[in-house]
Image 1: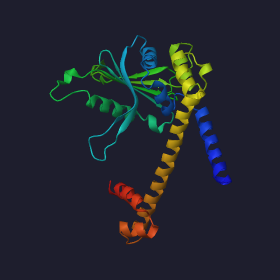
Image 2: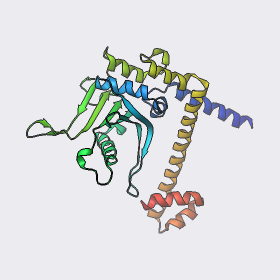
Image 3: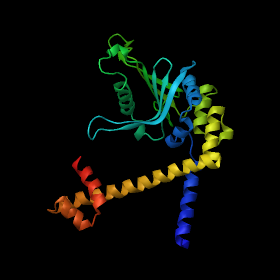
Image 4: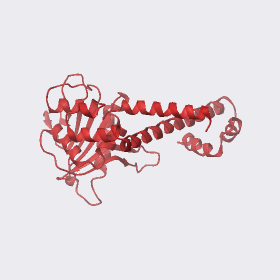
Length: 274
């Protein structure tokens, strides 16, 4: 390995370590690791949000749900949990406003509900579902810890009671209560500063032990490489579009002119045909 390559690798590793140092439970990669198969931690979070004991039967992180439609949008649920009564919970974390659009929660709710019934099941067999959105900011700007979203009958001002529920958690809330301490733990970058041991233990393992930190660093590195590759393909696709628009070139002629590899041609062709 040459000096330049070694220097570049060292810099990349320092950059990755800096990213990991600044991660908290609002980062979905870290959160997914901390809660992976972690029923006690999931029970803790849900119980605090609902103000009562929630008994979790199963929990999956980054649970991928594929669209049945060709070209349809797939989603991966940050946390997908099932309680002892069959109620389903999707817990999401989000830092930026673009990913916190209200129609996203609608989509998540619909995707969960669509998978509950088997062929021939009556609609009344649908269990309740909750989409719980930990948003790093105050979504509705009222300073409340939680915002509960329910369907109502406008003419009677009564609940529709269809079993679909959405809850936004205010990531800016700083109250001296359990939900305030929970949100503070989600913001914490150091396990020693956390209130709840179940969460602190997970953060400590993945940020402060060699084995756990290696896992997080690897995920960060893979994500960084994926973004670089996605941006590269996006740029090439745009270049092909521009060339085809400004000339009479076919797609293949544009590929030849830009000297695009066979592997990239397959990917770009699929994107241009969507």
